[in-house]
Image (tube, rainbow, N blue to C red; front, side, top):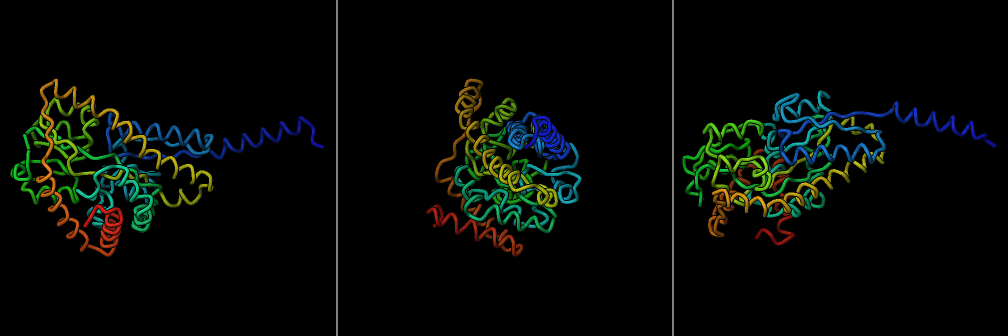
Length: 334
């Protein structure tokens, strides 16, 4: 029979061993520190530390802290970063499947349906297949809700985009804006506010209405378009070798907590939106809501972009077909 002293000594060794085995991952977002989604990601990292009892700690870095958004894919694969929380549209130049998976513009009308595609429509599996060539692994593909366009000019129809300079990351959103006659400008998220304020661009494809309000965009852009076209994925992807070394329970915690990150982001955004709209209206902002006819016209142009991107690579075709099958299954695409 073991003595009390032996039990205490064994426990001490176990605790010391656990402490020695603690690991820290550095995960960079594509967002500035003030962005609500970046803040939500920091809280997710704290949750991971608690749920793993300190065995895995996650340090969240803001956009550009180590590398620009477009270079994070290589930084993660090479182990310069342990992971990234971002939209894969930044990697459109590598394979247009990244754009189709990162934001099917005009495709999903609410965050829950988009999350369902990730979890039950094959989205997560397609991400993992796509990232395998880069030494990376997608834990999950939450999203940051339907975006509202920030604009310093009133844009009430697709025709009003003609000649407008609009910030948009390269990808399907930029292609859609070109179809509507706008001039897309690729800028990292950290430079968007200054670019609008200095009139380098007229508007931006950025974040949800409430998120844009919290960042002060409507002080410099008085004509936001509410619930416009974009519902970007905010995937959490890590170095594959680092993922493979984690025990099964830590992997399960990471997958569950990333799925919860989507719920947290979108529920908080839903609660904040009504107050943001009321405050903006009181300050002289005019939130613009497009008519169903104009939205249908925009979606028709978006569908043309889907089809064009689907021809670019075998993985792009697989992503397109997966989206199409899932939307048809839910009766959202005829």
